[in-house]
Length: 240
Image (cartoon, rainbow, N blue to C red; front, side, top):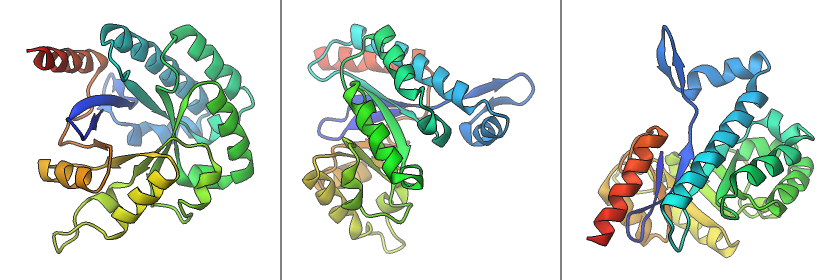
């Protein structure tokens, strides 16, 4: 799914989402099979597969779309992946195979995942960051920790949960949204707003200081070929 740069509405990157083309049930979303993959012990293999495929595709996009700010791609990381001692080796291998620009392959971790074992998470994330990956804190606001507490982790991006982004029944956005954005900037983090559905969402989020947004206003989940076409069309429009 595209993540856009609110300043000019250009595509800044993508979040990689796994889909399963089941022979009988058709295309299934992660919600429908991730829990099963965890239950039967396949989540680590699936996570590694998605990470490797994303890195390879990201390298293709970056070679085709040479720009001042390279396209990035983010991949979700599960708790079982984070707890594995081989994760560092796996990431190093993926990066060496793909040769993507430093910091553009981003690992996304939820607030609740990080807080399961903060000490272990902090150590692992520091080592992961040193390898040259970006780190994104996903769904911020759904847990119970403060952003000030989370500054002990080396995240470069925070994704604000859509519950803070969408307007209330009164037609206004939660007051805390502006505070979260300001604090994230104070901590040196970029901000991605999730759940942006309309053009007015994009305008107001940009006015609040949000750099990026993700949501159906900018594109639904698509396959790699469709993403490439979208990038190509954008480049041609910019050149015309």
